[in-house]
Figure 1 (tube, rainbow, N blue to C red):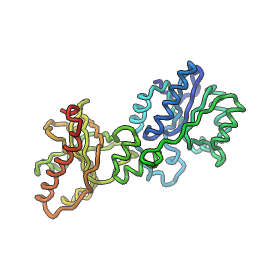
Figure 2: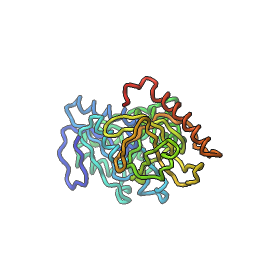
Figure 3: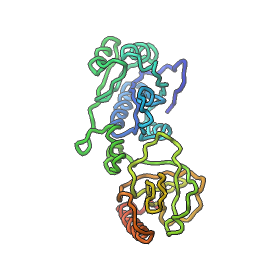
Figure 4: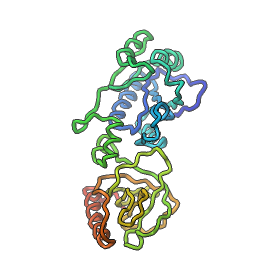
Length: 316
């Protein structure tokens, strides 16, 4: 996949089949669109082109943009899109000035005159442009006016819930990892550097890798204890993750710490990836460290059962 950013001129694409969107999550609904994009391009001996933006529109236009957290970091999104087989990714800067363009202006000036679009693939709720009436019917009219084909991809539902980035964010914020993963079509992940903590985990027999998530806009799921797969140097380990403020220890500062089962290597300073599989329980305040340790032992048994069901051969 070729990535095009900050371009003043664009290459000439062969029979370009284009789709446009933020694609946060690159979830099963997005995957359905991208499958249509790639297959359509191949059927006409063309090239598939995905247009996305460097910033989420809500982060540019909304005064409370700081509240929006994203399912994927930029790099995670790029990797997921690359795996779909898309030929070209165009990353446009999203600015307030850009947001004022109408659909007609964007289609005629950019898609038609600059990229020479052959086919446009849109989702069930796809819209762009500054006017409220810039819907599919308007796009359909423009396709006839400017002589390109338009294909609309139907909504995807899972468990009677419409698959969307908004609904996935809600599931993650509620700690419903299993539903979020179903809608994503892969396991939600957190990537970060292992940093030194207060070493209390060592003292109670559950040493942890404390993760520093460097992306300020990465969504952190609901506080609680999770069964996770831990990728270190390309190899998977089993573990349990605590997202929370560690009330029993009176820390009261959000931490993301993982106890990696049967692992004793020094990984300070390394980047690791956590794949969240299931949520075990809420974070709790225990009357004593002894009761906390007893619960952690139970959590380990639960996590191992979740992770080992049919997957033992995947781990070290």
